[in-house]
Image (cartoon, rainbow, N blue to C red):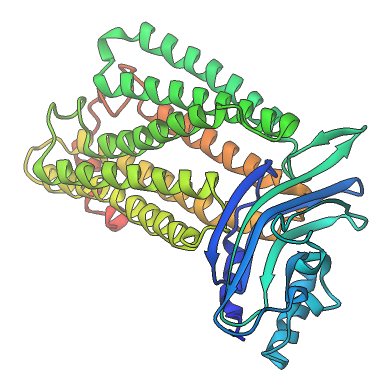
Length: 434
């Protein structure tokens, strides 16, 4: 028997995003994997798991496989360690024979060839978060089959296809979309009141808020239709389109603000253009990876690879957008030594340093803290991580927009002359060294 790679199993369980429980129709073709993870879903006491397989065939280079050594099962996170210990103690042990799993059926239950199919719904009697697996304990064998999965909870006899911890997401996203629409109205009123101080960057910032609001609206519609019908009805396409535009625009706005484009200088330097040329294509790649991760699942062979691509690209982009801010701070420090405008440069340096800290804080919270919340939160409260992410994003938008608002008294655009001597002393302080 091919030994099941235990770290790989752990990696899959850790990396898999909490699925929406959509109705999935999948095709497995000549797959030699010993373990295939299909979905992860939080069940309540009214949970149901409906599994249907058809056109099943098993090809082996050895003897005819024992059908009882191929089948589907549910595994809770608590039972995972016990199963891994069993496999570690006995490498030839078949996970389908473990007492810690919830076995659904094996290929022994299939109808006779040529149909070779099976269809059944299983009630989940013990509420928990489960992973749906297919196990192939037959050595040197490849499996082909069509699989249909339907995981849901019954709420007053109505099917809810969202995991128990995510069923609040449609309402959450709708509420935040209305907040951003109000925020957009406030931003436009500020721009209208200060027409003379409005720059091109402020128009891009307005466009960013529009994309964020639209992204949330389509995310809410996507989750609502999945919750009610089990399919997104095309709303997922709109969600991915606006998410891609919004993410690219967000990184672009941060880079442009960091360079001082349109309000401190009308053009970008060559190195700043290179940052944009790196960040934008990488974000497009990250969005492609996001779509593959969201629309497929861990059952595809390259799913882990796409997760790694997304993670690496996101880290590169997060690092890249910091450079223009650091360059601007150093440039202002150098300029302050020669242009005799210490007070003006001190104000700009202070704001740039504050922006640097805000960006670092935002990236840290949305990448590290939110991931930690998703990891440690009970499955019924997975929505808390999404709420925390949206609150952090809203706070970041509000702070960034306030710092760079088109106002004549804003020290970033028009600065009052202060005592030059005091400003020069402050500029010598190592506080601005990064």
